[in-house]
Length: 255
Length: 329
Image (cartoon, rainbow over all chains, first blue to last red):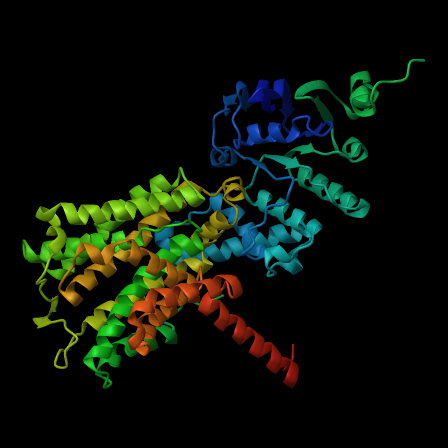
């Protein structure tokens, strides 16, 4: 089943095409990778997919429905959620509360009911706190639950962001450089975690620079350069693709 | 987490305290000061929701107080409607206009939002001046009758059974209860997320637009209700009362008290009411003095009075713990 597809997606900034004619499909159950040199348009792609930015041309389809013009909130409602390159934590909330914000999408909480402290609202809140703990346990952050979110290390904050994204109960997770700033061991742990998430039925689309990491994780890789797709295929195919090699390593020496 | 079974002792004490305080020998003048402090506190708690909790700039809060005050005054003096209908009507009208301002807030952030809300305040001020049919123009509306309950007039006088002090501070308790309830529940978290990182909030499923409008609405209703109480306390409303200066004073109250803290708003309002009394001879320097306190707080103690108090309490507790050892895990 085609979960997400882009058809000739293009985004122009002033005179520059950040994305041009980008087309691809992400199938349900895949782990799709997006790689490319810096400035290739990877984050711009995610911005368009998640509704944060709008496409100049082209369309994005979710299970066949056109979602090109949806707001981020509407996109999340459809089960597509993204994380950011720089971790965005809610500083004034604890780790648990951060994750609980993710649960807001499916909760029936309501300003009015909360103000008058309706017993149903309080019960809902308790349920959410437990759900948040379960998610935190899955990313091994349960012991940090009551810490203010801005006191976490980078690796912990990344895992919290992941838990928060999972709280929205997504079917597709867009991860923008989840491994950035992590050391070798943390990256390995991240890979295991992502595979865990995938096994629970979440389709993943990951942007990363570490080719080795991607080759191990992804079932299919899309390569971007200068806003265009220059190759798609299995990790093995990508590693042997001439255009990809050129983009990353520069022109080959004539032999 | 707090248990909700039964009424907590804090609230029982608070209600009793408010009920009994006016009869404890305080003079009428002191009661007047405290009543005004209460009105300001209710407005400030509302403003704190928008400014502190949701992180949206609003420089037009006094206009909502004016809307509530004028509505109450007009309904009571003209058609002779009871205070108990007129005041909620004022709150509701203020809320409606607050919602409209909230919709505007969706399109603007930061400095632009500050300007929009400032302009809104100015527009309302002009409206109060230029529509004598509705608002009495520059002369305002005078001789607003007393609110009555069970046949008794509500007044801070010595013989009154029900005081405007009661009206004012029960309103404070109500607004405080309602808005403080948000703190540990979903909406409060959503508002905090909206303040800390609106993009992340939106990207994780929080309908930030809905919450912005709701914050402005609730804040305006609180201000409008407080305005109604003001009308039956001073028995006069005029355009000069609800201008930009007043809006800035509410801002100062919220920031000095502690952004994001309903308790802080109450502390700030009390400070703002009590301090001028202590410096009677320096009346003209009042705003200068508060401006200086504001600068000091922003630079040195961003948590405001309440932040200082709670940090102080935390520090004292840890110092005590270190001194006397932990009493067991």
